[in-house]
Length: 123
Length: 168
Image 1 (spheres, helix red, strand yellow):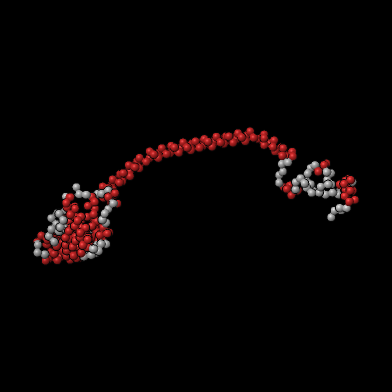
Image 2 (image 1 turned 180 degrees about the vertical axis):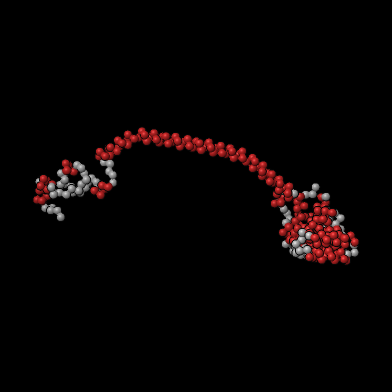
């Protein structure tokens, strides 16, 4: 059983990095958060990156295999997609999704991006 | 101005009837005529005529008032005792009522306490952590959001994620 204090601290750190405007915060979240073996940490990190709603943070959760919408955990992937659908300004996310559908080398990533793009167009 | 020559004074002292008619009577003393025949003292040595407006309890009037008050003492004393008893009874009622209310309040605290515990537990269930844990938080999201030293932020993130992963 994980100590509640650790869970709370990690949650606050990820939230804080999500609000931090320093570009370095994105790389911290990508390097430490999205590569964690704990699904809950990857989920929180992906959502924080989506909420930043900037090109570099959205690129992490859309174009990388095994991260964000392409995560092997369905919970993480669906949670990331849900956060993308909740964005008020979806323009940057749509642009990255279009580029991924057209140019990404991995077919699975292209398929995922196409599905998410269709969902976002409907929402 | 009075005539103060010796013959004049002598005549006034020994021929009182002659001067009695013309003497001014300013005295309020009811016995002035019989005692001094009204011709010796012109000043009011008993009571000033200016105080005539105020009630004076002298002589028979005073005695009458005293007798009247004595005759009413029994009734007044009885009334005082009655009011004291009534006051005592009211105080007793108030004290008893107060005690009963206190007892009722004591009983009514029980459900309030249960409600408070219920609220505490619901908050704990909702947040997944107790209020005590929330208050005694070590790292706040605001402090991380304002952090400028990103190497420190990376270290904090790495340490805490590692601690979580180690616990799984």
